[in-house]
Length: 90
Image 1 (cartoon, rainbow, N blue to C red):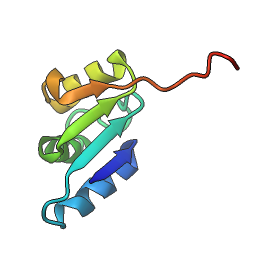
Image 2 (cartoon, rainbow, N blue to C red; image 1 turned 135 degrees about the vertical axis):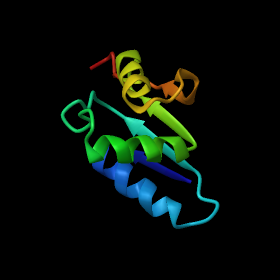
Image 3 (cartoon, helix red, strand yellow; image 1 turned 135 degrees about the horizontal axis):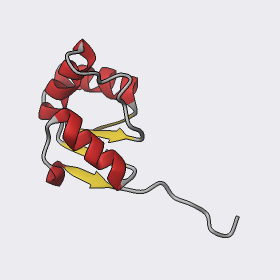
């Protein structure tokens, strides 16, 4: 199982996972990536292809989930929202 975070680790980790049969992969997104996923860019094209082959996607908020769904063309049911933890006592 591979679990990657953010743009570059997501990209490189999933490319590596493609080379190993049977590896399941989860990609975790923390931000909006408009600066890296501009329309017509090679980065967006690659990210869309990798997302289609990724077992599951995780986003840290509904806003990030909606961004991933919109930009990568995946369905919302493929993206789980898992909010960052906050220590309320601190």
